[in-house]
Structures are given as structure tokens and as C-alpha cells.
Image (tube, rainbow, N blue to C red):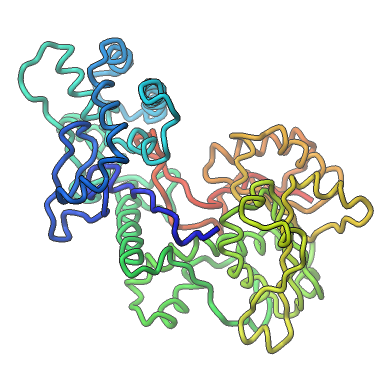
Length: 477
């Protein structure tokens, strides 16, 4: 499969109506955006872009129009809303989840199909008041319900981040301190929601620049070998990678932020592996093994596309001569040929590793992990670590994951599971404990010190962020 030809999903700014929904350019790039007169959810920079996107947008556009004029649905959406502002974001998020689910169900009935990811994003990331959860669509529905003949006011955006919204000054006054005065609970480095939003906007702009340059998603790993293993316990992303990025790309330290955050997406996998190994082992003898065996559970596109970044494990363990990666997952069947499956493949390494005859090999198996292990019987070799990146075990396919978890526990296989956010991590931790795992506190459920620092906004909420491998659900041995 050629991943480079996959169509880019409209970024958050396009779903918020702040960038052209076809070409993703923003108003600050010398263009004027005009709202779609049908759904009033998205904007275009030109008639050409609208025409180019119309075939794709036509169905959902008309469905949104029907939704807005459906009396029964209108009543259900307005029923739970409150007039007075609140900072009880948990209650607001509960209301929003119900509203989004009701709208999604209605739209799918009208379209007679499941919504696509971009269509779901239009609902999940729809601008809504931070204090009461109202959207422009809901405000228009409210006006109709109240018999108003005047044009209702629209939401206003925070002047700093432009990604938090309010329906009135009264509501903004009630929540502004939560938005810009207090650290975001699920952000990073004590940043506020406003500052987190600004980082996200920078990252979207950076991705657009890479796309315009036809370079695709930015990916980087340093081609250097550390002289010896150094603990990861008293360091961080910036200390380990920022200066090297500046050196490799000739950028200023101030400009390194988007580069570093983008790099952390893929690098979070090898760095999480190293962090887990350091915390699962009682001493550092694992850093001097001839061969290190890592099994990747539930592997799919991300692990395959970013296979070269796993060499960072070798680069930080100079005494290890061979890194053996085994990727297991049913979805790998769509990415591989029959000939490629189970074959030991020698992967390309940097000149330094190649000169030292250090190797990185990879095998792909299109089975669930417990099935793969059981099929080998006595030939199964226990890995130094089994890792499931963003497994989603608590979200879907939990029964098959339960079998894998039980196998890991019963066979005392050192393991770690990661998740996108706290909610998923805590749910997966319960599954691991139910399977008999004795979780190591430093490995979850807790924030992952080496999760990606490129954060995304949680959909269908007024606040909240998540990131790739952002949380450790649990580690055990």
C-alpha cells in the first residue's frame, strides 16, 4: 500500500471553519473565506475549491440542512442546555456527547450510511461555547424555537488561540480563567488550554507547509550513536532532541518547537520501549545483551511506516548488536504480501550501525499475538518486551485483547500498554488487572514521560487533549 497517496483528512482549523475545507489555506494566507450557504459549517477560499469539493460535501451538506429543520431533534438538542454559564466541564462534556451522538445517528439515517471520519469531525470539533456547550447551529435552532425573527448572534473566538469559543461576554467572563489562567489538566508542562491550542495551531501550520512542499508528514530520528546507555529518568524531549534538530536542519532554537513535536509522534515508540525496559528490569544488564527482542502487539500502519525510527533503540544501546522486531496484528494482512509474512527482513541501518555490523531485523505476522505465540508452541521465544501502542483494548476488540493479556500474564512476559488519554489508560489498566497483572506504578496508569508532545484536541468536548502514546495504561513482568 502506498501511504504517500492517502488523502489528507481536513485539519482541525478546516473543521472549525477557519480554513478552506478543500485546500486548507487560512485567511491569514492572503485569502478570503466564504461560508457554505447550505450547511454553514465549513468555508471555502474560492468557487473553484467549493466546486472541487462539492461531490464529496454534497451529501452531508444536505443532511445538515435537514437536521437543523427537524423539530423533534431540535427539541432533544435543546432540552439539556442551561442558560447560566458553568465551569463543570465534565457535565458539559456529558451533554455534548449525547448531543453529538443524537446528531450522528440522525445524519446516518438520512444518508443511509456511516459517517466518514471528516464528517464525524465536523460534529466532534464543531465550535461550541466553553461555558454552556451551545454551537451556532444550536443557537439558530433556539431562535426558531423561540419564534425569533432576528438573526441570532454567532459564537466568538478567544482572540489569542481562536480555538475556544463563547456565546456571550457573560459566559466568557465565567470561564476565561479556566481557559487562560490555569494549567490544562491533560496538557503538558503546565501550559493553559489557550497555550495548548496555540501549539496545536502552530503544528497544523507546520503540517501544511510540509504538505505544500510535497514532503508529507514530518519524520526524523537522529543518526548518531550514544557512547553508552544513559538513564531516561532525569531528562525530557527537549534535552534529548532539540539541539540535534537545530543542528540537523539549521533552524533557530525558537523555531524548533513544531519540529520537535512532530518528531515525537514516531519517536515516542522507541523511547517508550526504552523507558519500559528501564523500569521493568531490576538492573541495567539488559542494555548489554547481544540481541534485544521486542514484540509489537496489534501492529499496523503506524509501526510499519515508522519502522526506521526504531533504530533509536540501537543508537541508545551501543552494546546491543541486533534488534529483533516482531510485529503482530491481523490488520497487517492489508499491508503485506503472503511472501513478506513471517520472513526475517534485514532493515536498513545508519552508516555507523552498518559499519559496526549492528543489525535491525523485522518479521510481520498477521495474527493476534496470543494466536501467534500458541502457533509456535515450544519454538516461541519470550521477548525482552511486548508492547501494545495505543491498543484501544478498552474501546473495541476487548475480548481478543483479554486473551492476549492473559497469555502475557501467565507466561510472565515483560509488557507495557499505551493509550491516547487518561480515560483509555485507566480502562485498560482495569483489563490488565482483571487478567492478573501486577502493575508497576511508574508504568501506569500514568502519564507517559515519552509519549508524543504533539497534542490534539479531544473531540466532542469543551476541553481536553490527547496524544500518541500519551499515557501508559500499565506495565508488568
